[in-house]
Length: 168
Image 1 (cartoon, rainbow, N blue to C red):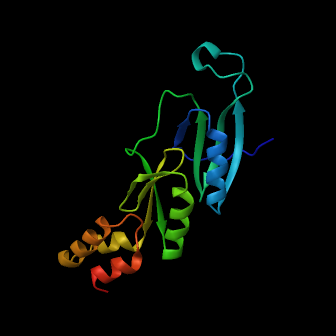
Image 2 (cartoon, rainbow, N blue to C red; image 1 turned 180 degrees about the vertical axis):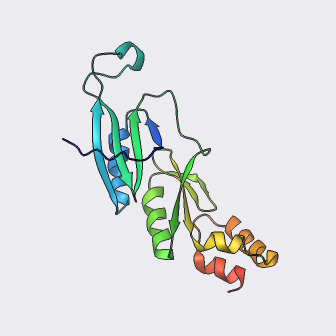
């Protein structure tokens, strides 16, 4: 029996057409601190509403870097858009490069801007060096502006270029 992982008061629910298992396996392979919990399946009840064959995976509980999620095979009714994204705060360029490379593989290249990307399932991610927030919130408006201007020209964020623009 799969382990119960849901303990958060609020848990993001990710709606997929029929790729929840594939997506969860992908995300769990990308994040080092990740795991899969309970899996539920559709029964014969409600077929006229959900249209899923009995035995099809309905939900999968999973964690990524300590954050709990649920993935739902809900059919083609809803799709992801950029109104919701997940931010990955990175400490090093190596970490930025790793997440960018893994999550952008097979994704929408046209959606890559300012550290944002869309993965192959259409989910939006922001791969951001933690230092960026400090730079753009600096009390020195000129330094903050230079960092922001540099960031706005990037697809994947480059820490060295940010630091040079910021004036470190």
